[in-house]
Amino acid sequence: MLDHGKTVVAIIAAYKAVKCGYQVAIMAPTAILAAQHLVSFKEILGKFGIKTEILIGSVSKKKKEELLNRLKNGEIDILIGTHALLEENVIFKNLGFVVTDEQHRFGVRQRGIIAKKGENPDVLVMSATPIPRTLALILYGDLDISIMDELPPNRKKIDTFAVTKAMEQRVNHFIKKQLKEGRQAYIVCPLVEENEEINAKAVLELAEKYKKEVFPEFRVEYLHGKMRPKEKDAIMQEFKEGAIDILISTTVIEVGVNVPNASIMVVENAERFGLAQLHQLRGRVGRGEYPSYCILKYQGNSEVIKQRMKTMQQTNDGFVIAEKDLELRGSGEFFGTRQHGIPEFKIANLFQDMPILKIVQGLAIQIEQEDSKLALEKNQLLKKLVEQKFKSRIEI
Image (cartoon, rainbow, N blue to C red; front, side, top):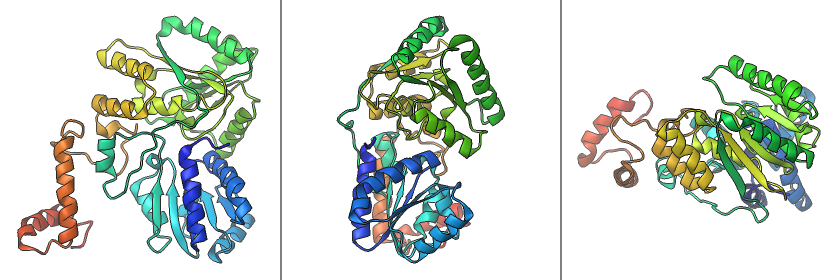
């Protein structure tokens, strides 16, 4: 039924908030994921008389107006949605609890906007991308951190293989064998720079080749960032329903999609992805009763590439992978894109200097607690420095 332990946590917390008289906002990065949450929340909380609704871009103008009125009047208990929840006209009567799912897809500012729609609501940020415990302390020093490090009971271990171009024939033969047994496959192309045109072209070329030459007897479809949300959602729905055998895509499918029948994840040019992202992609399979496989196709002979492929083959532990990713790539690239809010230090290295950074963080918390306005004499020099560095952004 539910594909994630974290979804269950969000449902229990939302239930408690509603029972205490508050409304709840659940923010997901994609319409597909929001719709998936709607099904899960309604299935469990509907029987308690809790009203859950969804607000995404495709909701008609008339339905949206009616929904926003009911929200303002307190007739909706839980509102699930995408970035649409951030719009000014989305007004809650009594927002007390906010959940952001896949937090690395939302910047710090976006989380702040949704939180301001209530009177100091409780906030839960969730992510399936394991962040090294030490890095999490720095990034989310203002939050209490809980880690769920066990797999759901029926989740299968995924066998991972790193292969070079020379193995292409064997890989295709293996995919065919799985498809003939009724399974489905994902093929993921890497993002080339930040150029959607080039990425779309790479996906289309591969889809064309697979349709005509490699897998003509199967239904092959594709997804990429240039497509309209409605098109993406329709393709994803067909894949979920089993009407598509092979889905070729950029990383748009890395987040939260649950297709239990998909048993193969092939990542093209795996050397271009961070380990945390490869781990996220691998997590799209192994969700049903069938043995599942992740095949990483890579090019290049460098020691770092070999090390990264070896790490993926040796462990399914997201935290071990996250530590290795941080060590090999550095913090700036940890999330694949430089997320607003990740500190870029001039002299410190987040991986090597973690012990001293933890001491500094402890001292910062202590100063904040005993002298938040930096009024004490011993903190005058610090106050001066803070004013110089952040004068445009803060009031002291």
